Length: 209
Image (cartoon, rainbow, N blue to C red):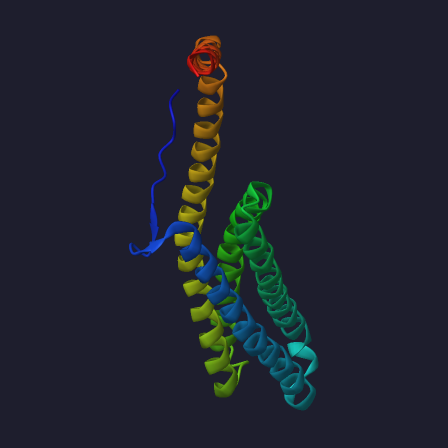
């Protein structure tokens, strides 16, 4: 039976794969919590800036920026919840939860790339129109740098997660093969012969005594 070998056997080339993934998930929870805070601040700053300096011409751009920032905030919240699900599945060795999180991570990975591309394009437009203040520039740059780093982290995390799923499948396959070998007729016959031989030897010993 051909088995697919995992691409990675260790996390960060030094930690055991499963425990490394669990540590990584805890780190991602902390990072997601940090960016939930900064993105919430960016959303609040946009609303305050528009209420103070906004004009009717800025309204459509303001609504677009608020919608984009809200999508980013939703993404970080979902990432926070998703990693909690993975930690539960990892500790319990629940392959269904891990596989569910793997497919969820692929969807989030694609979505994060699209959101980052849209966010950068909208920000460039705002910078050229001098719509954003310098204070908001800095917040947005930090957020977009965070988006990019998360994409890189997610790519590596997906590869590790795929390797862990393959490892789980191989372990399950090995257990099935071992069970089948132990259940073969020849194996059962040998066990029966050993049992009979043991009974005969006990009978001989009792007769001698």
